[in-house]
Amino acid sequence: MFENNDIDILLLREDLLNIFNELIIQIDIIEQVNKIKFNIINKFKKNNINPITIIDNISAQEILNNKLVLNNHMLIIGETNHSIEKYFNNHYINYEYIQTPLSFLELHNKCKNLINQINKSTLERVNFKDFSYSFQLNTIYTTKNSLYLTDKENEIFKLLIDNLDKIFSKKQLLSKVWSYNEDIDTHTLETHIYTLRKKIRKKLNLPNLIAHEENGYCISQ
Image (tube, rainbow, N blue to C red; front, side):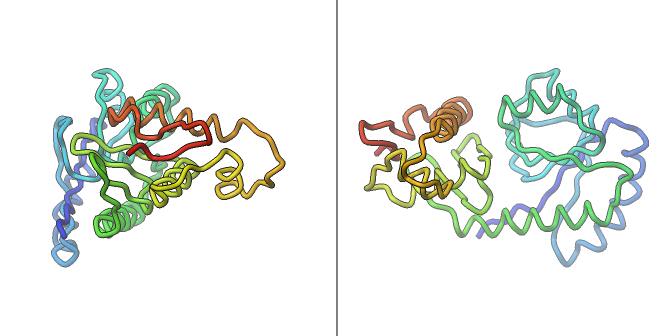
């Protein structure tokens, strides 16, 4: 199994950068066992394959300003920012905020747990045609991009990919994913399917992956 344990750090706040520069040497000594390497970088690379990037709100703003669409899991140090969140959500960039004051021990443990999840998922991925899929990481991968799914989107997609020979009706999906009674009518499913198909088309360039048949939904083959 290929394991990529590198974590990039791109911080434009001078105080945070200075702290991380001092910590890197100590962290490297600790990580000789775990083999996780933290790299301080000075610019984003669109084809970066490292799974996690630690940034601050200023470098997150650089992503927005330069209209970058990145596949790394972004850990943003600082307060939430509406414009950054809106851009990241619109471009399906996987991110979460790390609030200050910062606990470096918690951040370090979070990174280790994420790395372990990512490496473990490579053994559990479903490979199909032009993409692979990890239920554990809520993520669909192509050779160029990856797409993070919400929990409900993930449940829908897993149900479809695990049953390639089956078409699921609206009532069946509502029952299995939401545990709704069959006589309940709702637009919840249509909204989730519409959003999911839009995300897959826009981020992964797989416009017909989820087919809408007369009797329901299935993975296009």
